[in-house]
Length: 260
Ligand SMILES: NC(=O)c1ccc[n+]([C@@H]2O[C@H](COP(=O)([O-])OP(=O)(O)OC[C@H]3O[C@@H](n4cnc5c(N)ncnc54)[C@H](OP(=O)(O)O)[C@@H]3O)[C@@H](O)[C@H]2O)c1
Image (tube, rainbow, N blue to C red; front, side, top):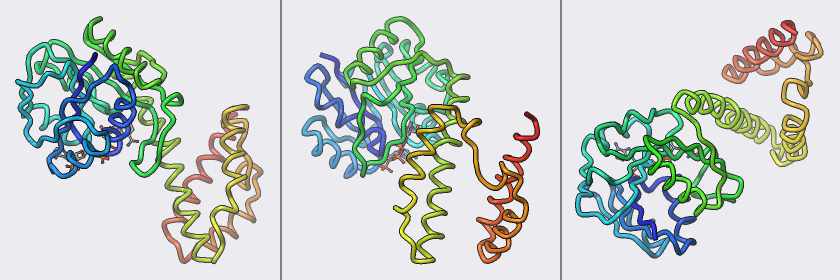
C-alpha cells in the first residue's frame, strides 16, 4: 500500500484525494491546509487522513507528499517543510520547475495533471493526462503507480516542455473560457440564453481536434469581411474591454492567415 499526504485542499488536492480514496492500494495519511477547516472538510469528504496545519512531516508515515497549492506560495511552503530525506516530494504545477524541490529530499518529482479542475465539477480521470518528471527511477516508478491508481494516462515531460504545455493550456483553456464568460455576460445583458451557443461550442472543439484549429478557422476576419468587422467594433462601443479583445484577436487571425 502506498501512503500519501497532501499539502493543499484546493481544486487539485480535492480531486486527487477523492479519486485516490476510491483505490484500496492508496492510503491518505495527512491533508495540510493553512486553514485547518479546509483540511478537515477534505478529510471528512474522503473519510480518511488527518487534517493538519503544521508543515512538520518528520514523523509522517507518508511515502509521497504531494504539494498542490497556489504556484506563488510553493517556494515558501517548501522552505518551511520538514520531512525525512528519502520521502518522495512532488508538486502539481505546470509552471514550476522540478528544481524548486531540490535540497528538500533525495527523491523529487512533478505530477502535473494537464486538465482543468474545479471542486464543483466531477472529473473522469481516464481523460486526464498526467505529466511526470522525476529525479530518479525510484520516483518515476512510484509516480507511475500513482497515476495508474488514478486511472489516468501518464506522460514523461521535462520542466521546459511542461512550461510550454502550460502556456498552451492557458491559451486553449483559461483564455477560451474567459471569452466564453464575456460572451455569456454579453448575451445575458441582452436577455439571450448562453446555452443557445452549446452546439456551436461543441462543434468548434470537435472540428479543431479532427481537422486542426488552423484549418477550422471561420468568421469575418478569416473571410476579410471588413465591413462586418467595423460594424461589430462600433456595436461594442459601450464595452471597451470586449472591443479591445475583438480588435486584438481579429488582427491576430488576419496576420496568421496572411503568413500562409
Ligand atoms: N486547478 C487546475 O485546473 C489545475 C490544473 C493543473 C495543475 N494545477 C496546479 O495545482 C496547484 C493547485 O492549484 P488549485 O487550482 O488546486 O489551487 P486552489 O484551488 O486555488 O487552491 C489553492 C491552495 O493553495 C493554498 N494556499 C494558497 N496560498 C497559500 C499560502 N500562502 N501558503 C500555503 N497554502 C496556500 C490554499 O490553502 P487555503 O485554502 O487554506 O487558503 C489552497 O489549499 C497549482 O500549482 C496549480 O498550478 C491546477
